[in-house]
Figure (cartoon, rainbow, N blue to C red):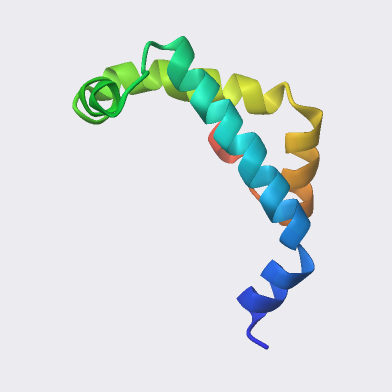
Length: 84
């Protein structure tokens, strides 16, 4: 079995849980920053990178404030450097 496939099999539940936590945190961060539609996402995130900073900061805060997210990041070997 390929190493990536073995990792996905071993950590299937953890990967799914982390993905749900990350998606929820990202959706909340977007909503808090007035991004409620695909058009908002294009105009406020993709076309204006400075507006993206508020979303990124909000997402980082949500992940850092979630002990389970941090625990899963450790278990999955996800670096926290992007949260600094």
